[in-house]
Length: 356
Image (cartoon, rainbow, N blue to C red; front, side):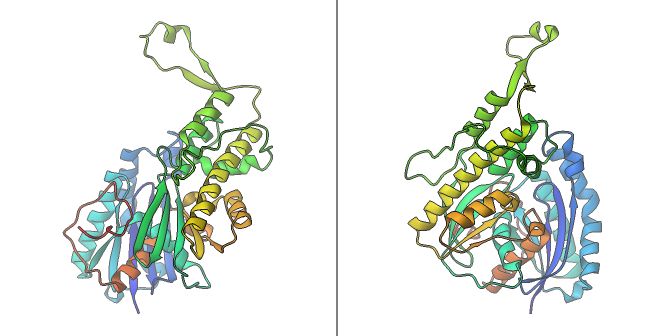
């Protein structure tokens, strides 16, 4: 039996959890920073790192307390090493290193994306993976298609060339004057909208590409729903000054939200189903914050002939439980604890992820 403490601070959630055997969540504590970043319409890195530093000690202690677990009962401690924001990652890694020294427990550095993958192993009742699996990771910072051939073995098939899906949701949400984060708020207002009201583009790139691009979709929405405004004072400023954008008064926010959401979801589903057929997989897994989107779940299930699996809503966004779950399988594969590592802000998930 393994009992692992997982610590996650890659972006704007300070999270810690205790997980048994990579499957059973004993506690899962998350301190969200949504209210802090809402005024900026997105994550402000310096604000995020300071908030992590203030919250991490309390969050970890609460996770241990709710799990009714002592530090001497832990098998190991796991922490997100990357990818993510440098300052945020450093808060988590430095705290975890100090805790490892204090408790004399091994420390396992974990890839954030692999954490999202293993959030699927925390779904109850437990489902034994049927490899090979196609994994779609969709979040605020990542849109990745991975072929998972065994535990810890990945081949990157495609990914976003510009904005991640969650990033596109946030940016379009700001255009529509919706609160941050954009994803859940666009989904909320889209329920009352007509998804066929606007014919936004579904960017497919070349016929054989499994990459994504959402910048064109975002620009198409901007051109349709906003108008540039300039005050007399701004007109007198230097020529390179950026024009301000304002939502057009004749725009139906519900229709625009529904049309945008439909275009983005159809792009994700088209590429994922195509990749699944090309690589003859047995299952499709979805993970990350955008995998909570109801339309994405419904369309993926309806258009795929394969089983489609995704985590519960509480495990879609960043959390410590997924880091502990991934660490369990790395521990089983022989990973040794170490304090000799730095954060890796840009860290792709591949077969060589842990070969340095």
